[in-house]
Length: 172
Image (cartoon, rainbow, N blue to C red):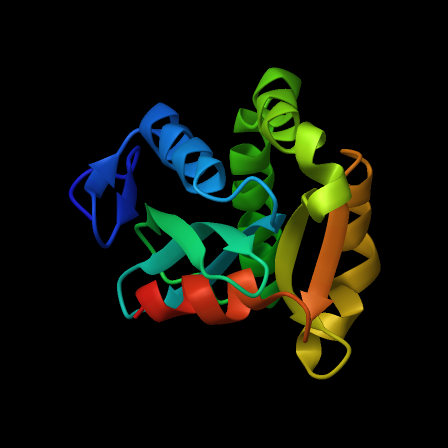
């Protein structure tokens, strides 16, 4: 967590967003006939003196593997308010989603478009670490509304695996 402005990939180490985006393009170019799901999700863990957030970018080649990276963000205090924590998780996911400009998304779609007849597909979602069960259910409408207002699909548990599984691994 030396540089919170960088993304981390287990194979490639620290990456800028542009480098991570290039890795995404390379991953897609290896199989342009596959369906892809690009999802972004953030999870957090409250420690004694800080709260550690991890925002994950996860590209799933459906049925055929995935590529991902995470970006750490540290708040130098223990966040005890669940609403504040969930709101910041959502904001961090929104921040990364906005880096995927229309031009960047069109470049991905243009790689796949000639192969639609062979199964190529692309979806972009935000995965929120909230669900119908537990204390976070009170935040579903507010947080999903923030995502849908951006024109993106919002997923909650149990469908929000990028937040509660992938990002969660790196918060401890």
